[in-house]
Image 1: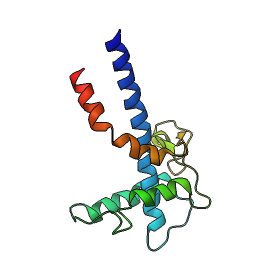
Image 2 (image 1 turned 90 degrees about the vertical axis):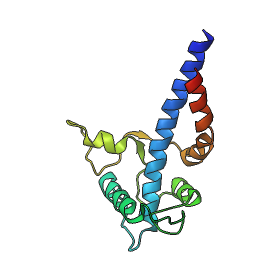
Image 3 (image 1 turned 180 degrees about the vertical axis):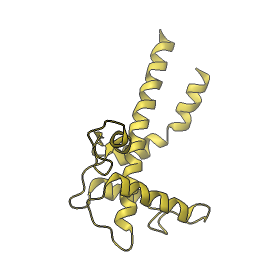
Image 4 (image 1 turned 30 degrees about the vertical axis):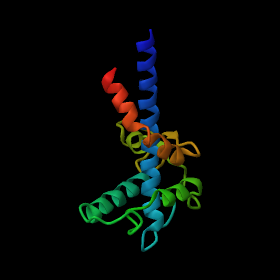
Amino acid sequence: LLRSLLLSCLGCYVLVRFYVQSCYRQFRHLTMAVLNMPPIRFPVGVTQLAKLAAACHNKTEGTGLALGSDPCLPTFQQINVTCEHLPPGQPRPGFLAGFMGCMPGSVAMPDVHGGIPCVHGVCSLHGRLAAWDIWVLAFGATS
C-alpha cells in the first residue's frame, strides 16, 4: 500500500513537472522574441516561436556563451519577467500548444496558441521543482 502511494506521488510529480517544463520552454522562447533584435511584432504564433528557438539553438550551440549574454540565451530572471508580463497582445502560452495545433484534424491552427493554459507563477515553480529533480529521480530509481 505504501509503495503504491509513493509511486502514485512520483507519477503525479512527473506529470506536473512535464506541464511546468512545457510552459517554461514556451516562456523561454517568448523571452527570446522579446529580446530579439530587430524587434519582433507581437502577437507571435507558436510556429514562429519554434523557428526562432531553432535558429537560436543553431546560433549558440557549443559557443560557451553565458546566459544573458545573447538574446537567444535569456536568464531565469528575464524569462520570469516575460512570464509575469506578457508583451501587449500576446496570448498566454498553453501546455502542448504547438503539439495540439499540429495534430491531424485539429481545429487549432499551428500559429495560434492553445492547449491547457499555463498558470501564473509557472516560471517560478519551474525553478523550485528543478531543484528537486535529482532527488525524485534517485527516489524513483530505488523504488
